[in-house]
Image (cartoon, rainbow, N blue to C red; front, side, top):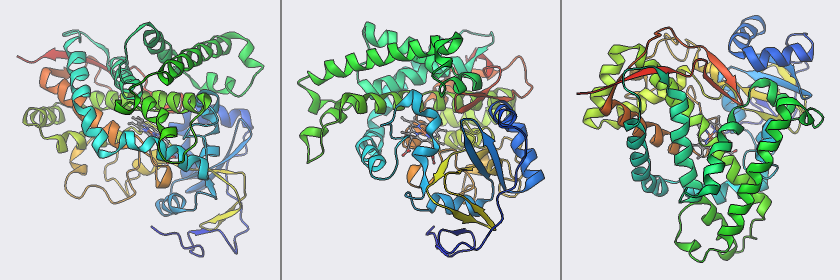
Length: 448
Ligand code: HEM
């Protein structure tokens, strides 16, 4: 949708509104805690209390404006990248992903990074990954314990980490990658309290923050060692992994070569953004199927018949009901007017995925798990956006859907999945994702 600069929805020039966004007056520490730990309950309450534009104050020093009106969100996604800075909006991730990360940069620098990474996730590359993912998925489900409960989230993380390591490095063997594999699991295991420590160098000298900082330093050493080794490889042009592709940039066209620090930042971004998210989406999918014998039977039939469209609908519905990332962020470089509210430069607007996905106006009976919503025409455009939107839409969206479908098929053709606790698991914040609080416990019963 093109943004009309004078539309009533979004104005960038000649602002007429003077009203500031409404919001709670609680102290920053309280708002930070509520947002960090209980946003799944707090944001719907705020929406009822203040409407579809709500201002929060959240550490570190951010005025955040949560948006839940679809027209406002569409306008933000279509708005100019020079006004809506996603890189600055994602600043919370800088300590982990680094200043050059495609997630943390804006405008020209961001476009360059995105252009360099894109080929590894286009249609042809995705087709090339399918066999590798199938092989790893089948090996994974063969190892599952029979007839006793376990956390499907933990198993999905192991699988998706294995897959992304291969995408990023090609071969994922040897002591260095073994250590990296082990440490990356620790790096993603960040709760809201640890997140606060990321922005406070003094805290990083004590307690859990200190241990976390030392893990990060070791991960960096391993990545830099891998980069140094790979720079010496003589077969880079024949390799299809992301690291080799990025290293050949300097030999093609007039692009300057990437520095070690730039390479490190893009690699860690893909390793982190590219596995925990998909693992969480898969865990929620299994959680729903395990609790719902009717939907389980339909999905199993689809798996047996190789009906990937249906399996994709199952995954998409799980991502609607349980958005992995609950909102995305854009920091404003100038004052804008959204609806009848003026939002000052420096504020961060956050389109809320969770609030739109759970809005009965867009998704009737929003609390029900109904994959059929995604068959035929599917939900109206813009009402399902687990991968964000506009020029910043997730780079790995197609990849993660492919991975999830292949994995789901491997699970359902081999196991009947059920659970010992059919009650819904609540979402729990972990780093920037919302994971199933009890790990999406399932019981896998091998099929005859
Ligand atoms: C279910 C799985 C996933 C979910 C729910 C997810 C979600 C998201 C979201 C919400 C954003 C922000 C978009 C925005 O600001 O509008 C994003 C960005 C991004 N994601 Fe994903 N993601 C997933 C999987 C992946 C995978 C598998 C990869 C890589 C292999 C990946 C790489 C990225 C990157 C590089 C960006 C930054 C894009 C940019 O700023 O230009 N993601 N993702």
